[in-house]
Image 1 (cartoon, helix red, strand yellow):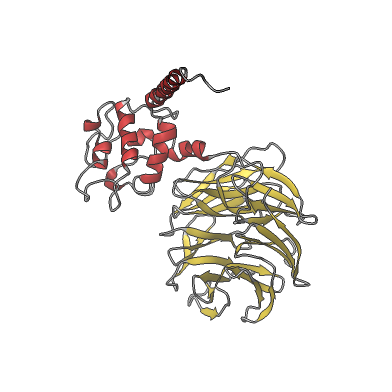
Image 2: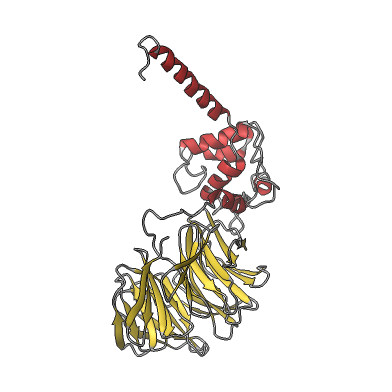
Length: 447
């Protein structure tokens, strides 16, 4: 029913008053350290002022640490006093050489205003214990429910076979989905996980899954999950950037993960307790694998190196530096004596790391692959052209698998190495029988 003409101005006035009251209420809502400030600092500052790098002697990876002066001895935070808060003053410094963040653009005005308001309101910590890591606080703000149904398919970035070969774990959006291989039916959805899933490993003897992922430049983690209904993830770490890869040792006693924060982390698989943090690389750790005896950990990095470390002590045992581009993937040979690795726009390298001479040889590959795995027939190589090529160790292509409609972004080998699964950027999963050279199951892995 339309309003009488004389009532319209009164109605508009009343509605404007309501909007004004809401605006004032929103403006008066205190800035939250946990929800607002911690994610900003983690995203903008933690890389230079965290556990691995405390430039200027200053760390802000916890509220407690960010309250302590760095080398300048000036108070970083003075509650209610931005002029006496070195943290704020360095953000608004006019001299680009002294302003924070260094060697980067100044923070946007609205982000500086947020920190200013927080300090003026008393620089209150509403994030629990003052020694709680910012990355852990950020986790609380970034974990969200998976969508009930997907508006469109999402890229498949990780796959893992169950130990009995009947199920396939597939990366999703804030979740991992479990699919029946025989029917292609969705069995279970496991939520409460990072936005992006980068790696999945199924324990060789149990139902336990290890998952790596996070949100770029904000948070990363490794989670242990039981795929049974209603099980909650057990987060083993909270890092300032994505965890990119994860692997169980063959006997299932150890778990290893590589991260965009350049670290390698080794965990006790049963308890989830961190055993070692290795800083053996200068850039993203993109691939991680155990030798067949579980004694060695193999990593490939964007820093153009491949390294082998002791799984027991974490010490570097061997390094291959023959690349001039980022290394995508690396695997051990079955006997553990040789490493095979793929780098951007490079041939496949064979590196006999156990010999003093570190003998190497190269094999030309087709299609610029970035995925590599041992299969029953030899080697499976896959990448941007959407094809999977099965080759011998001498470089002969035995056959090519056609059927993946987009770039291959994930590759997994089943318990029987004559079956593999691939995932693509368009969300399609293909299960392949290498005996007949064709796919036996294909489905879009989006609920």
